[in-house]
Image 1 (cartoon, rainbow, N blue to C red):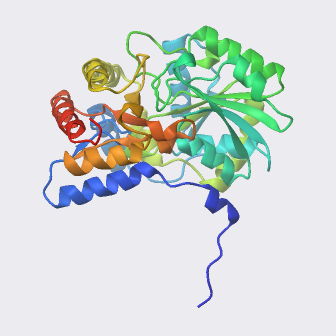
Image 2 (image 1 turned 180 degrees about the horizontal axis):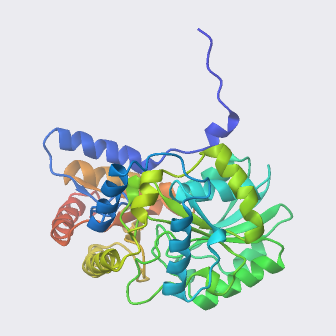
Image 3 (image 1 turned 60 degrees about the horizontal axis):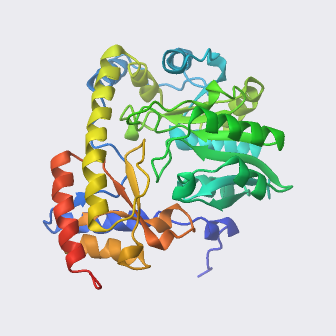
Length: 392
């Protein structure tokens, strides 16, 4: 039999290590064990009821056809109006591109900006798909080690130091995954100014906007109207399975993005777009804000507990629903620690290896997208698991 030959890029695109954890968690559940999930970045809340009702009405009305590649005009206008409401930004709806999830937005930006061999600077640790999308279009990620001293974010000095002749862009995130850190308006402005001066494009992942605690995350568009913004209905609006996101792009880029969208995926799901029109209603936003407060309470419970157990989390994350913890007190192999937790106490967490290379084996990520009673149970189980961990 002829051996299959895959494209060389496939060897450079790593699997989600967390999926192995999830697979094991599901196997344990199938055996009757009670598994507490702290590995997957998915809100435990269902999609808000107003969005569900809008989807049901749209389905009954037969809204199942293709839409324009850039998205329903009404939804593009609604997204633009949301920027005015939340950030005071007068955004032209023509700059808004509706995409199949935030991943679709990243795919468009990667395809448009990155030639073969071109480099995009990003923090290490960061969301893993970012660098894999670049590899898909034959580009490369320049991973810049970050830590608590910069709140796991890039600084203008880091950008200057790592910029090279083949660099074309900087990709940042605020709030960030896995660290939950949030960039201030001044930090965003400095990053934009530096990137622009170097001749590059600034792309900011704002997918966790709305999920901040004790502060409001500034949009980069407040200080850099020429920046690129990735966002999604998945996190704040709880629409993970609907696969819907958006991209805000410079106006001159939109015709090229439309051409790419037509060829890559035709359009985002019509039914999801119709449902998302209800995402910006007062009723939905009130639900989302109540859920934000629930996440806030969960963070404030879990953070001190993990610190007391020996995980090092020097900075208090201001956004998202993750705690990125230094687990080096328990050894230099966080994958082994993750296996121990799931096998002994059935608590699933994510090894740091998913998020980059810099001290990845000494970190783990806890997602607090679970109810407070379940997090309390998880804390008790983690404490027991650490009690049986070698060296403790």
